[in-house]
Image (cartoon, rainbow, N blue to C red; front, side):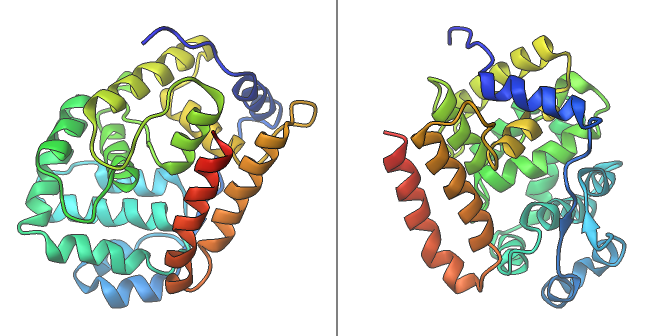
Length: 264
């Protein structure tokens, strides 16, 4: 893929982040009781997570993964951070662990190459033996925290979820697909973000964080009708995630379709 220049909106987000003192991403609030009730076998990790979970809190559980249960704990911590206050988070996490044979053993096989510093081998492992109900958006959250345990900044596996994918479709010629595990798309994504990270002299996950955060607010002076709609839809999606799970599930396809239409 030809080199893609850093979009102006990303440069401006980076400038604002530096001006604000390089603040950490806002920690995710969550509802411990519903998680503890649904994932009884993982109360050990759930009891130790703070009421608002930041990236570093979830990352701690990926350190020292050496058995299947530990991989399951790291997975649950990643899902708590990923879902935050979304009501169906515990249900969907438990479904993955309960409806896949040897779920934690398979998670361990995905985690091991990430912890060893091989993010693409980890992604391919997930692609070659996908767990039912675990898609790219939340699967790469698990990969991300496992890759942090490698201690190698250039081996970090960045998250690729719908927010980031939509942003890339809006601001670059590259439109990664996350409907299934596509190693080629993920490798292109990693190469692109690493290129931008090198130019900005930042870690690759900082670039991913800036992309995610910049989706919620388009800088004044660079607004367009399409960008306004995209930002509004992104904020609407965040609000919808706080509704009853049944309502959220009904709204999500419509939000996705609206986003696709406005990106044409």
